[in-house]
Image 1: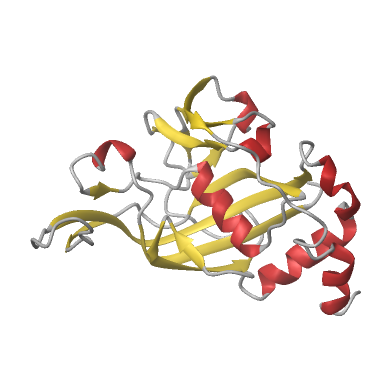
Image 2: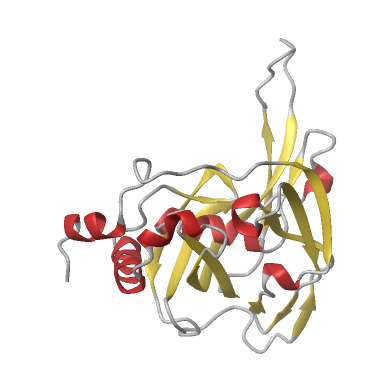
Amino acid sequence: MRNSIEFEVFGQYALFTDPLTKLGGEKLSYHVPTYQALKGIVESIYWKPTLLMVVDDLRIMNPIRMESKGIRPIQYGDSKNTLANYTYLVDVRYQIRAHFIFNPHREDLAYDRNEHKHHNIMKRSLKAGGRRDIFLGTRECQGYVEPCEFGAGQGFYDGYGDLHLGTMVHGLNYPDETGKKVLERRLWQPVMKDGFISFIKPEDCTQVSTIREMEQKVFTAQDIESVDDLYDQMGGE
């Protein structure tokens, strides 16, 4: 696929929080990462507001296992000690395929649209382990990335069949990505087939609800280093 990268992300723990479990102050992870969580990982590898990152496919390599821990959450308005149970995924490893497109709602950044240079910087950033820290759902769950061939190797769920995962959060629609002045939430019903999940595109999600009003971020040429300058700093070809 054009402008694509394929990589493996792994870590000791992950917490892709089911929002329904946060109401009581505790957290329970989804069984698999959300589209939004994987998009965040791709953006930690390389991101500029000129681009929109699109996650295409996910492959779950290790068995889905969970572990609960007693956590003392930060208390901002109460000095009492509180103990909460957080349930994490353990020993996670995923293969991901993603690509980028130019953000059609950022015509103000049209000067930064150099497909070849962005793609090369992205691949170099992946080989270096990302330009920012990689987190698996939450900050306390450190992750690591490295290039791979998507679909290669043996996965735990090879030949497993279909596994319906119920209703999950797909992701969030930000004004920078939609051109609308609202923040929206997307839901969907994924099915894992032999360990693979193919994501529908954000615009194809039919279960969308508004969270609140929000303005698009403003960027100027002074705020953003051009891809040409960044490419030269990384040694060009």
